[in-house]
Structure formats: C-alpha cells, structure tokens
Image 1 (cartoon, helix red, strand yellow):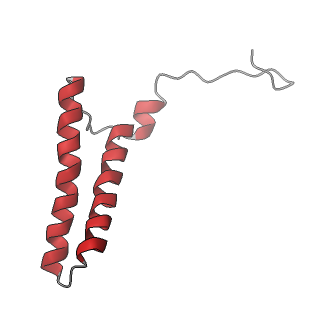
Image 2 (cartoon, helix red, strand yellow):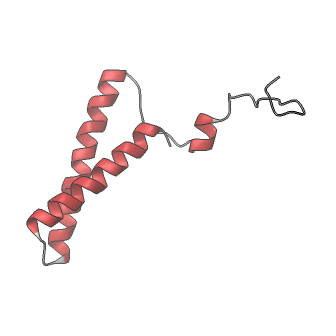
Length: 83
C-alpha cells in the first residue's frame, strides 16, 4: 500500500465522518449513503492524482515491499558509528 493509498483511505474516512456528523443519519440506509459519498470523494481525488502522475497509485504491494526492498541496511562498527 502506497502513502497515497493510505492518505486516500484517510480522506474517505474523514469525509464520511464529517458528513455523518453534519447530516446525523438515523437509519442504516442513510449511513450507507453517507459512506458512499465519502468514498466517492476519495475516488475523485485518486482519479485526479492518477491523471496527473500518469500512473496508478493503488497496487497490491504492502508497505514493507514498497519502502524497504531497495534500502540497504547500514553496517555499524563496534562503537555504533556507521561504516
């Protein structure tokens, strides 16, 4: 999951929460509609980002695969400083 994916997820959740607080749904159906609105907000943002970047921002890799596969571990000497 990329950083942008995480941010889009947070955007959907935060938007849904804010809409829900404003509209104060009383039924499951209304809550479901609000959740869809929050998700749609994130989808619009995702589509615009992908168009701007020219590539997909959602993928099947997890954070460990994305951020740590190409990084080399630092070697330390006995006193703890980098070699």
